[in-house]
Amino acid sequence: MNTHELTEQFKQKYGDGAHPVRLFQAPGRVNLIGEHIDYNGGYVLPAALEFGTTLVIRARDDDELHFASTNFEYEAVVPVKDAGKQKTGEWVDYPVGVIVELKEKGIELSSGYDLLFHGEIPNGAGLSSSASIEVVTAYTLLSLERQATDTVEIALLSQRAENRYVGVNCGIMDQFAVANGAKDHAILLMCDTLEYKKVPFKTGNYKLIIGNTNKRRGLVDSAYNERRTQCVEALDILRKELPSLEYLAQLTEEQFKELEGRIGDETVRRRARHVVEENARVLASVEALGSNDLVTFGQLMNASHDSLRDLYEVSCKELDVMVEEARRIQGTLGSRMTGAGFGGCTVSLVHEGDVDEFVKQVGEAYRTRTGLEASFYVCGVGDGVNELKGDM
Ligand code: ADP
Ligand code: MG
Image (cartoon, rainbow, N blue to C red; front, side, top):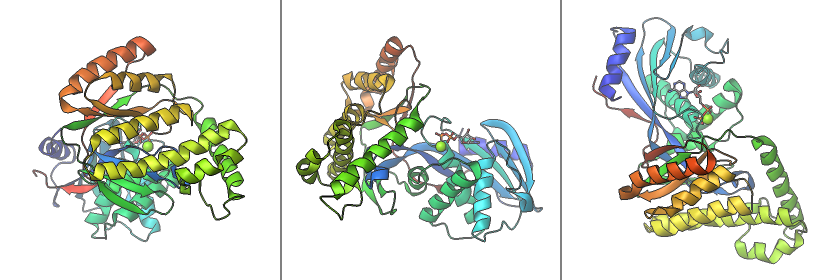
């Protein structure tokens, strides 16, 4: 739906009003490389996608907040002063959670608003539609209330909304990428310190293809906790040699080679090796992308997947099959799982001339080999949250 159609839909729903209609948009995101190293003091490298969540909004003359979404039937009307008093378990908890966090910061809405959300991001597919709706809500309301729109602050506030109001214990990467993304750039981010840098990522004739395995994830939490425990175990051993070591990802590959023999447990050693090498791959990716070397970047993506499969053991048959089939396509430079693993999505970098072939071939082979139907999303790298100059 274009901005004109969306604005028309808004007017049909809410009628005429005295105040201007404005449109804002926040993207979805994908992590390009840097998996399972955020909690080990390593870097992630997410990018904003070209599709996301649009919010059409207009101030009201009363104090009622009217919420609607083109993606869900559920609608709600809440007086500003009551926002956050009653959790609904419905999608409106996401924007209401943001309003609660704005209130926490001392920012009270000065009037009611009519809101219409329109999402192009599949929900629950791992492309972070939740971060997108939170960030677009925060940015929009701050803009309409004539408050500062610091995108780092907006990311943190949105994460708090999801953690505290919605009750999902997510990290900062998603909101950060959605708020701070930029066209033709990826974001190098240290999740602990929020140290970050926008790095060039010109995809040129290449597209990102995100493939959803549509596999229901099992065992994610217990496996995740086990990996974290194993990393702490490795860190404790290595600290005896290097007392100043705070995180595994601070080790260079050379340091690790010298010290890895101290880790007696072979599995724990492999986990630690993944962390050290994956962090090095993220930094090598930044170098490669800086010189527009997509071929090298593709190889790093491949190496990342292989390490997640063999050393960290968080892949699964479905992810492996999809990646394997993706790499058979001639125009594929690299393919890897993205996200925590055990299901979810893959991300591949594919020449635009081979996109149709990719979707057809990989989709068919995936169906034959797993019995599951994949979904594919083809996109480039887009901007972070911003106001759209729509046709009003
Ligand atoms: P994801 O991986 O997409 O972030 P989540 O389960 O974290 O999956 O968040 C998805 C939820 O976010 C949806 O079920 C809905 O409650 C909310 N949401 C996301 N986008 C929209 C939208 N456009 N309109 C209404 N609710 C949305
Ligand atoms: Mg989410």
